[in-house]
Image 1: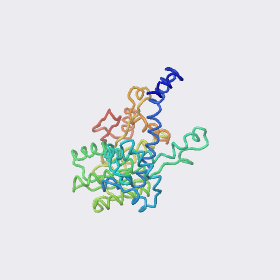
Image 2: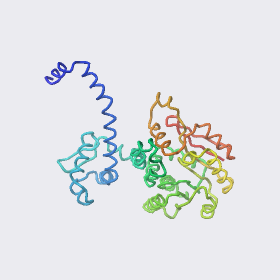
Image 3: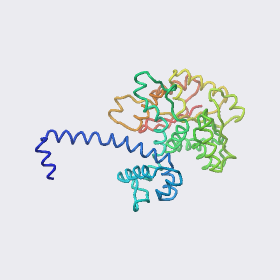
Image 4: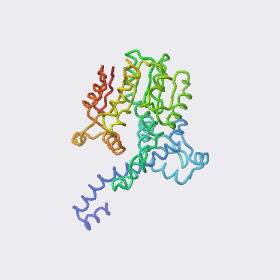
Length: 346
């Protein structure tokens, strides 16, 4: 109290009030940055995997087994201990904290996505100065795009789409841009009659999906392949005629060069697989004025998608594209709170 009174006498109430406001504004911003980097590092090192699996991490043993710097690990863990993300027993044993379960079960995909686009935000100034460009000197980590998308989508769109598939009785599913295979794995676990086929252009992501399918014991019912969804004939040769195709956050990646690219893709899909329904999930465009009134995590989603040359369009424009492609809208599952729609097209 004495220190506060002295500061009040020397600096004056107006200056102290400004400091208080600056602290209230700045602390969440800077803490969000530091905490994000620390959490992401520990995710990548496998710390949270071991903590979830074993219920505890003996830090010296963990550092020794993975040849890691114990001093740095301790600094990171103590920082998260201060923020209640971790608990601690003695000096060396770290336990789940107040926020650990939500962090690992719900937010893991978010942190993988952030890491996937790390290069993008590291080079923002160079991109603004036209010294570097996305897709040339600046790239995303494809494996983490696949991992993060799957882990995030399993929380909302995957269950909603799976419910639609069950209601329609579809059993042979082709997932376009399948990522880490999470959607097909979930479908096959829930229904022993489901047969899944996944296609992704990234060999790295397909390898990840194949490992996960093997670990789940579903290799006899799910087949994953490297393929270009703009070249559908080889896919048709391997898959035959599915009951339905699915895509999650895939079509918008091709909007940068105009909606005609997506229209052409959908027309090819209809021609190659005649009569096959398409269930596709996309986040729809939101204007800055709406975000200003109701900010949400979709705000950051729009930012990194637009910076990485992925398009976003309004809901009605998606419907126009579907009609232009020759599809009719059988059903729309709309989730306004996340600006997301699942379109069932026939």
